[in-house]
Image (cartoon, rainbow, N blue to C red; front, side, top):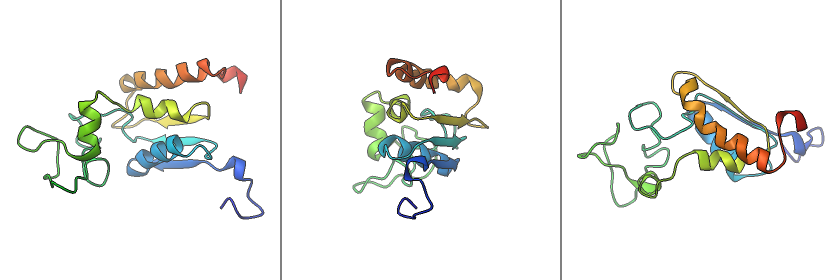
Length: 139
């Protein structure tokens, strides 16, 4: 898209819902050329109690070339694998990913997995934006 003459490459954003929302968050955080990130019900924090948050699955962060786990919520008999296991062992969570999106606009549309009680994690993104000199009023 960025190479099309009718497209302003500085105004390209990334958007997704659920599975796509997860990838929109990662894409926006890890490629700073996206002007804006919008994610609908992606699972904004790791939560092994919520089956649909499922970052532990191999199609997200649980892929492990040395070991295959059964799909489903991690248990002692079916432990975490891949990058997801390493991130949890090191105390990582998605608020760190959200911070990488700053200072660009970041919309989270909550749903079944991202109800208001979980939005507390987004306060870290707000704080990073403030630290960088960006507030709602300054945009």
